[in-house]
Structure formats: C-alpha cells, structure tokens
Image (cartoon, rainbow, N blue to C red; front, side, top):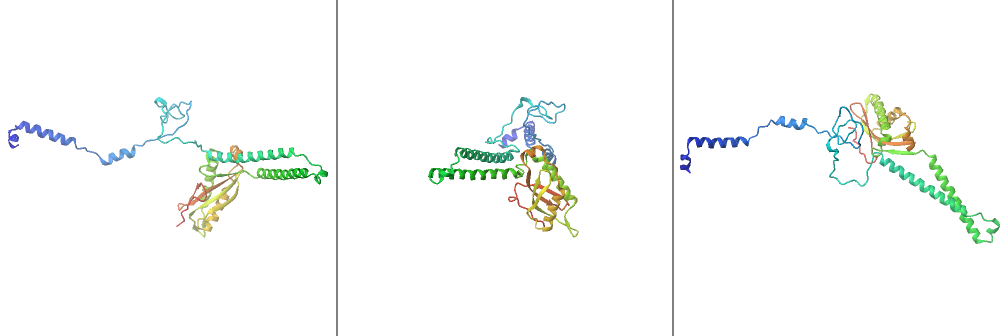
Length: 298
C-alpha cells in the first residue's frame, strides 16, 4: 500500500484530493433557519368551499374555482374533488333538524286527523236506536252503548285538537337547528343583548360582577320576551337577577319574518351569558341547558 502511494505523482495526488473535497462539499447544505421557518409561516393555503355553479363571470376573479362561480374564476377541467371519507347516508342541510321536528309534528297531527275521521265514519254507520227497544232488545242496547262510547271519544279528540290549535306554536333553537330561517333574527337579538349588557354592566354597590350563567329566553312573534329564566346559575344571585333584567331591557327584537311565522309563533333559546373582566357581555347559543358546563367566577 505504501509503495502504491509513493508511486503516485503530484498531479495524481492533486486530482484525488480535489475529488474528495468536492464530494465532501456536495454533502453540506447551508440553510438560514429563520428564513426557512418564515417560508412555512408566511406561505398559507386558502381553501374556498363552493357547491353551486353560476352564470356570472366576474371581471376580476377573487379565486380559482372548479367551475364559473360568482366572484371566482374557472379552473381547468371543472374537476370534482373527491373525499376519502365514506359517503354520508343522509345529506343534512342547515335547517334539516328544524324541518325534521316539524315533519314529526305534522305527522302526529295527520294521524290525529285520520283517527278523528275514522271515529266520525264509524259513528255515522251506527243509527240511533228507538228508546222503546232498549228495554227488550239486548242487541239494540249494545249498539246504543257503542254509539255513546264513540260519541265520547269523538268529543275528546275534537277537544284535544282544538286545544292544540289554540296553543302558540313553539320552536326550540340550538346551533344545530338555527338554520338560515332564524340566523339573521337571532344574530340581531344577540347583538342587542350584548350591547345592553356592555353599556349597563352589572354591578352592586360600585362592585362589578363577573361570571357566566345559562339563560333560557322565550321570544314571542312580536319580539317581546315572554320569559327569561336562569337555568344554570353563575353562583351569584345578584348577577343572575341583573342578567335577566339586561335581557328584558334589550327587548323587543322586532317582528318575526314571514318565513318564521309560517314555522312558529314563539321560539325558546338557551344562551351562555359571559360577563368578562373587559366589562363586556358575550352571549353564545347553547345546544341544551344540561350538556353545558360553566366555569365559575373566581
């Protein structure tokens, strides 16, 4: 081995060292750590979800889309992006829980009407019996008893239907059932309550009251609050009382829209009232009053 190295000329040594040096340099990479990090922080990916094609073709598109959309350009191919998730068995829209509840109510009312029609039809097939035959004819007595039973049943069903029709229709709202029908109205209502609570922040003897509670509000079709009740206390009775007063002062919220009136006469909402240390009131619509947990004030 020594003989081999001694036999090498100066030029061969220089070429060998040059190859080794270049190979070592190729394995080294110089990177600015902060600059490399900024690339990922400053480069964002904006995703715009769309689901409807439009005939509008804007002069200045705001985004590339899979098809011509209002405000968007047109990507090649109009490809439809697939999802790795399995298809949902039922397609749910924003108002679908509301519609489902309404369908159930309509179903019950329809069944009640069908029962009412059946009783009336059966009663019509049973003629009145001559009172003189009741004493001597057992069949006539049974027929008359049957007719009286159906008459009582018919009267009870009609009374129930009349009571149901006379009651105001009520809807219970939650984030899942808010939908487009109630979203705008509720947002305006929320803003009025928050403005009232922020402007007249609760205090007792000069001491500001902070905390969270759950408040259930029953809103009439003319925008009045028919009932404001605390369903989960903040732990401070004064704050609970003043929160209900704030909600009442914020009303009325205006008449229901025509779409809302077709659906209901009143709606019941449960909202989280949070009186922050920034002296503001924040309200959040809750799914229900039992599944929410509150952080007690410190």
